[in-house]
Amino acid sequence: MSELETAIRIRSATQIDLGILWDFLAIAGYEADVAAAKAVPFVAAHLAGWQRSADFGFIAEHDAEPIGAAWARQFSPDEQPAFYVDDRTPEVTIGVSEAARGRGIGARLLSALIA
Image 1 (cartoon, one colour):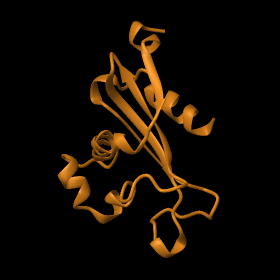
Image 2 (cartoon, helix red, strand yellow; image 1 turned 45 degrees about the horizontal axis):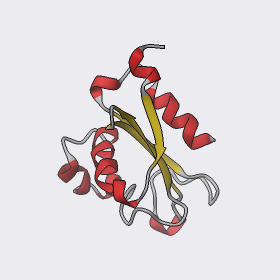
Image 3 (cartoon, one colour; image 1 turned 60 degrees about the vertical axis):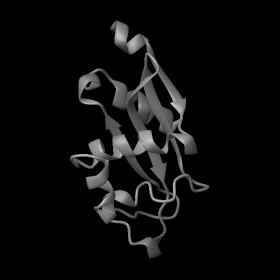
């Protein structure tokens, strides 16, 4: 592992991390910025009203700076999500900063979600 990979801290996301999560939702949604992500209802639905009782996620940090985030949200059929499977399968969102890509950060975040 590189120095960056060993110096990464993965921590639980909380309500106070909403701004960080929006930054990474913009990345995951291929939007130019947070304002653009909020303007697309399908994208914004992944964080609207965060943190609902079933919402959970993680933040990856290097030197106390966020470099990635992943979270899960359980939608109901009446919310008309694009990828609804069933009432036990949440949608997962993962975003990693461009500078940290290709170093396994997304995989570590996904592992944290699965665990």
